[in-house]
Length: 380
Image (cartoon, rainbow, N blue to C red):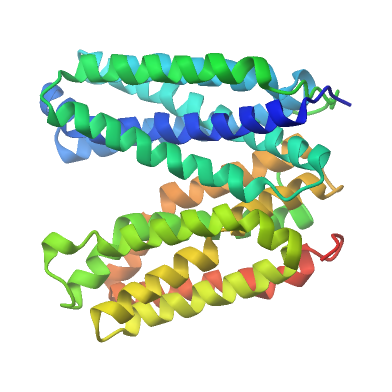
């Protein structure tokens, strides 16, 4: 099926996830500078950010089939180097149209990298016969922290946005030069349409992935407001919930492989999902800061391995070609990140933010409820 140096392929997969997180996180610290440089109002900026999402979704739709036909290695390499180029170009945009085009390419690079590296991870995990997916996804979080920290540090040192982006791009290129030769040859020879609407078990996996990603997006965009509006912390400390959530999720993913190996995917989804739902209820109804932060820790720890397991199951199912299945759940998952926080905002406006989080907990409860269904053909 494919040539695989196990150690090298695992390293390359981890580096691919790191590159994805690093590249994505470089953009956030640049946003205020780009907005000021081009004098963008909030409405225009919001429309431009949609270009990033549109590029990602369009690339995800076709990348699965392309990777299945021609192998993940070339797609990961092309996406990674393209990501470095677009990071370099982001602060160089001279007008709105140029920025829109760069963000479209930036999103496409991220989207194609996301699908192809997850496909590569599925194949490497199968060949290794070990639970590795959670650890791979943890490296995305590590890359995200590193990218945002390095970019923020350079800008805080009053380096220009162009110089900061150049250094970040060089780091991405160096990482890809290490990654590329170690990627496995994973050509599968799957032919057929470039996209297929998810069906059967893949549809369930896609919907659950959308919910899992929606939870992550909600924690990023709304956790601070939930805890500050309750009066538990001042506005300046509103970032505490996301910090403890992120630490718990990262820790859970680093331990996820061993837990999945020992307990099985079904138990991990069942109890992890239940813990995350309970944590969300605790966070909503907490009357003290330690209790609220404890709730966010439970959400992060419980939900940490949901997405990695769902990607693994997409690679194990037989109702759809693996490439199309992974592309489908990636697309739906990313849509959850893009659209979910806005939907939460709409519900919060009508019913209040605590009620919006309760509705999110109800959605998240579908993960443990469906655990037996989606793992029925997998041991454990």
